Structure formats: structure tokens, C-alpha cells
Image 1 (cartoon, rainbow, N blue to C red):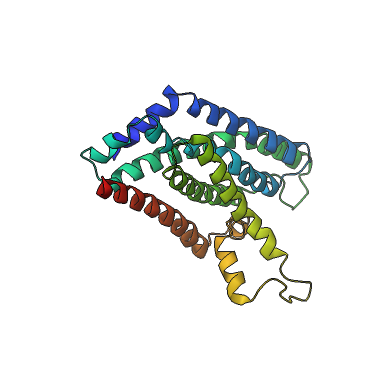
Image 2 (cartoon, one colour):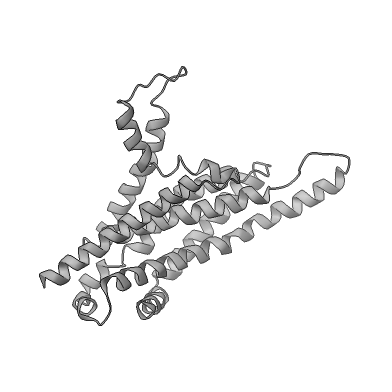
Length: 258
């Protein structure tokens, strides 16, 4: 698995994909942070992290579209299938490489929040008599970052699964974006499925429960408040596990077929 991981990490920067992804991610995160916090004159980071997740719908497929599709296009998939490494190790190596690049980009983007702390300290110095908290809340930021790491991990798992089904990178990116958009829209649909008195307008309880399970944003709110929600942790890990497992099954079938 380590050999596959190192190979994938090198390939991200031998090809322009890694540089393009990191550049787009850092540029978008900086622009969103500036617009949602500094320009809005607020210390709340809730909107910033929320729209960062929306942006991830577009940029994460750039990271995952080549994972397996390129192997098919370059006719190197057979080498992977006959290599002295298990299918599980191969898939996990590719997944962890993509997740490492995503996590590193996210952590680097946290420097965007430094101006908020500086402004918060300056304002606190000018309002020494104020008992209210001034500046961004650290626990909320930590919770939001943890939530985004979990959501990003799930998005990457979905992306590599889609990439394993096609040899066209553009198709893999488009299908992944469509799947992620659907998972985000579900949150809006289920949220609009009740009127002010709580009367359900969309389907029955079972249908709403199924829709809620696929909604990735409905469980992010607790992280935004700085709360560690174990049920949400289990959900995101389960979602990631399911799509990684499906990818493994796809390649086990291909190895058996060959």
C-alpha cells in the first residue's frame, strides 16, 4: 500500500493536476474567507465553511477523476491487477493519497483565518470593559475543520468509485459532481419537506429517513457549533467505507474476470 501511496503522490505533482487542484482550492478558500468574514465584518466562520463545502463539490472531482480512469486510458490497469499487492491495498493507497492532498490543502488554507484573530485582539483591546467574546471561536473552527475533513473523505471515496467505472476522466468528474450535488440538494429538499407546524409534505417517514441518510450537510451543523457528534462521525465513516468497499469489489471482479 505504501508503494501505491508514494506513486500516487508523485503523480499528482509530475502531472499538473496536483498543482491545479491546490491552486484552485487555496484561491477559492481565500476568496470565500475574505468575502464571508472580512467583507461582511463578522467573526463568524459558519458561512465560510458552509460555502467551502459547496466549492468542494466542484474541486474534489478534479482530484479524483484521474485516480482509476487514467489507469484504464493509459492501459496500465493490467499492471495494477497483476502486481504483488492486494486490491484492498491498491485502492486504499490511491484513496489515502487523494485524501492527504485534500487535507494538506485544507490545513494550509487555515492561514486565511489569522486576520480574524488579529482583528479580534485589536477590538478586544479597545473594548476592555466588554464581557462578550470578540473574535472567532476556536472550538467552532476546530469542529468545522473536522467536519469538512470527514465530508471531504466521503466525497473522495465517491469520486474514486466513479473513476473506477470509466476510462474517461471528464465523464468521471461530471458524474461525481452530479452525485455530490444530489447529496447536497437532498438536504434542501428534506428541510423544505415540513411546513411551519411540522406537518410532513414530502413522502412518509421511511422516505424521509432514507433521504436524510444520504444528506451530507444535515449532520454538519453540530460540527459548526463545536460539538463532537458521534452519530455523525459514524455516518461519514460509514459513507466513506461503503464507497471504498464498492471500489474494491469492482476491481476484485475485474481481477477475477481476467
